[in-house]
Length: 528
Image (cartoon, rainbow, N blue to C red):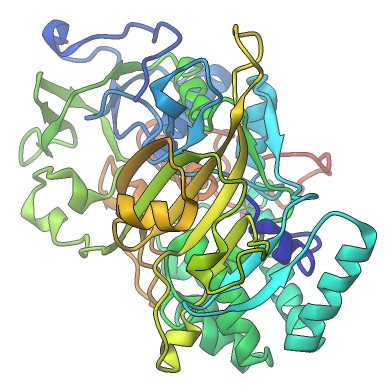
C-alpha cells in the first residue's frame, strides 16, 4: 500500500477460490439434513471476518470451559472471506495473488496479527521504502512525496511542513494516537462487553468523533483545513471511499492509523479459512438463508430456513449486513435495524508494461515521472474544479510467480496495478493512463458502510439468543473490528444461554477488582 508513506511521516505509532483443506463435516446442499439438535446448536449467518471469527470464539469457549454446543455456518457464496478475497493475474494460480477487497491490517489489530502467528501465515509488510506518492485533485498534483533515501525523506518532510505547517500533522498525530490508545483497551481483561454501541462509544470517549464529520472535528481541534481536506481526505478516500466532510471523525482517524501495515502473502482470506478450520464448525457454502423466525410464540429457540432445508437453534449470530441478505425476519425485529447505505466501489486490477502512469493524462511533460501511487482529494472540485476520476491508483510491484512454481520468477516487465473509483473505468481510459494493458479484472463492491455522523446505532441484541455482529459497522468498519464485534456478540450469547463465555463467567471489569497483572502481549479471547 504505497499510500501508507505520507501517513507514517506523522503517525509514528498508529491501519473465487476453493478450499485447500477439508472443512470438518462439510456438507453440500444436496446432503443437508439434520434432526432436532442434541446437543444445542448455534447458527452463524455469513462467513466473512465476523462470521468465521464468531465460530472460532465459540470454539475457544468450548475448549476452555466444556460448553456443549455445535456450530453451523451458512454462506451464500462459494468461498470464505466475505469482502476479503483474491484474484490471480490472467486467472493463473501460479502467479502471486492480488487482493481484491480488504488488503491490510496494522500493528494495533491484535486479533489478526495473533491469528497470523498462531496459524503460521506468512505476512508481507508495506514499508514503501522505494515508492513515491502524489495527491491529485482532478487537475493538478497538490503534493508529491518521495521515499527511499535519507535526503528524499528530509525533502518530503520539508515539502509537507511548507504546505501544511507544523501544527497540523502534530495535532493529527496526537488525535490518532489517543484513539489508538483507547482502542487497545479492547484487548485487555478490563474490556467491557456491550449491547449498546452508543453507551460503548461514550465509555471510550468517542462520541465527539462519531457525531461530527472528520473535517469539522479536525478543524475544531486546531488542524489546518487544507491538511484535513487534502492529506487526511486522501486517506479517507482510499480507505473508505468517502470525503472528510462526509465521513465521521472516527472513520477519519482509523484511515490515518496505518503504522505497521501488513497482509497475508497468500491472501488475507487464509485467516478466515483458518478460523473455521480451527472451530470444528459445519460449514454450508452456496447456501442462502431465506428466513429466521422463532420456533413458536412461546419458545426461545430459533428456526433457520435455508435453500437446503431448516434447522432449529438455541442461538443465532447474524454476521452479514442485514439489508444485503434478503433474509426475512419477524417484523418486530426487522424494524430494529435501520437501512445502512454502503459505498459502491469499483475495483480494477490490471497488468501493464508501463512502469508508471503516462504523464500526458496528468497534464505533465512527456519526460515527467508520475508517482507510482496516486491518491486523490475532492478539494479541487469544492473550489469549482474537476472531480478526480479515481480515488486511488497504486502499483503493487511486478507480476511474480508463486515461489516454487515453474517458470521465471518475474514476468517480462509487467506491473500489477489496482484502481479504486466511484465509476467504472473504461478500456479507453486505461489505455490513456497506462498505454499497454495486458489483463484487466473488474469488481463492483458494496465495499464499506457510509460512516455518516451519528449518535445512534443498530442494536447488538435483537432478541433472546439472536445477535447482530454488523451492528458495529456504522461505528467502525475494518476486518479487525469485525472480529472484535464477533467476540463481543459470542460472549453475550454464551453468557445468556450457557452461563459462561469465552473467558469464563466474568461479565465486566467491575466484577474482577482483584485482577492480577497480565503480560504486555495479552490478547483478550486468546490468552484468558
